[in-house]
Length: 134
Image (cartoon, rainbow, N blue to C red; front, side, top):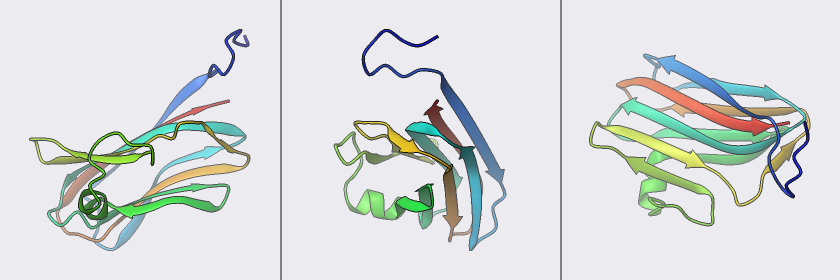
């Protein structure tokens, strides 16, 4: 059923991916969503590792939208909500969480892909959630 609210999101869906005991210098695709659809938001949580040289990569229809390391996010001070749409948080339990969400949904026609490239030892697991809509 279509929404009667202007600009409302219809049929939101959460897609989740998990990798454990990730090898150093490896890239893992956590979430892959076939289009068409709308990208609403994502979060990636990393447990373990000590240098934060793990990259979060978001590609939409073959175009790179985000490709940044967790360390770079901390170095740039993107540690709270901001208009750029990407932020990082560290919990007391040694978890780092990257959130991605722009003021407006991003359209994808063919494929949305959320990946990580791990360039640090000791990463125990990475969990990702992506919210899309049709």
